[in-house]
Structures are given as C-alpha cells and as structure tokens.
Image 1 (cartoon, rainbow, N blue to C red):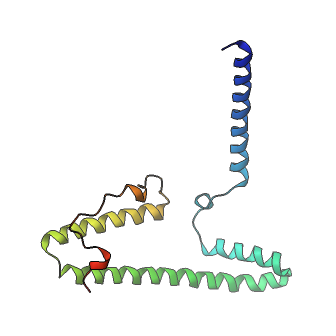
Image 2: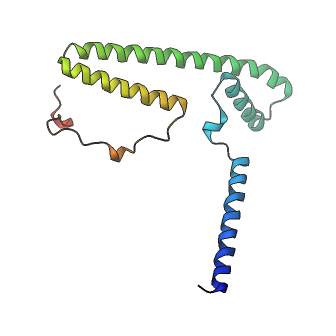
Image 3: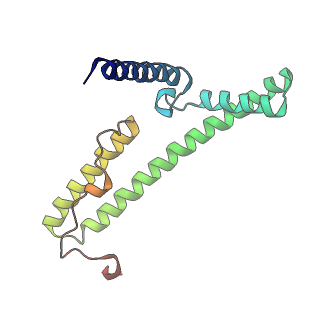
Length: 155
C-alpha cells in the first residue's frame, strides 16, 4: 500500500473514531434509557404526571398545589394494589404447584422443582435489570420426542 492510500485510510479511521466518541457522549448526555432512570416510585410517578399536566393543561400554581396530593395518594394506592396483586399471583402459583405435584411421579416432581428454580432465577434477573446474558429463544434445546404436543395435551 502506498503512502497516499495509507494516509486516506488513517484519516477516515480517525474521523470514524472521533464520530463514534462524540456520538457516545451526546447519546449519554441526552438519552436516558429506562434502566438508568432508577426504580419507579410513587414520588417519581407523581412528578412525571404533574409535569405532563402542567404542560398540557396549563395548571396554575394553586391547582398544582391541590392536585399534587391527589395524584400522590392515587400513585401510592396503585403501588399497593400492584403489591397485593403480585402476592395473590404468587399464592395462585403455589396452589397450582401443590395441586399438580399430587399428580406427578417422584421423578417429575424433581424435574418440576428444577424448572421452578430456573424460573425464579429468570425473574430475579429480570427484576434486577440483568438481562444481558439471557440465551436467545432460538438456542433453546428441542423438546423430547415423547413430549406431548399442544394439539395432543390431555384435557
């Protein structure tokens, strides 16, 4: 490669590199992905809703003063309803597992426990925001040959 071509390649590489660095800084400064915003709290929900209402409805300071506690109260109630709903969800899954377990062989119960543990780990990773090392769906092993197919499942 002659010196002229080498200079062109080096200049283009430098421009590309500088563009990437500048783009990274700009994106870091102005883009806030959900995982960088922190957990959703009643206070944050209230603030977000109030900003939207002030902007869209042109609320007066007096209206903001009266409406903010209403939104905060409802946000707290929503948070509590979600917590209660989640607890009910857990109870229903436990009931399902207990009732199913009575119909399974000992080997199947062991396998079911392993499946539950894998699911718990996935949920913990999801809740903690750790989603990087998940295996793509296409990489799942095929089901065993003797596994029931959806159209053949017993009723």
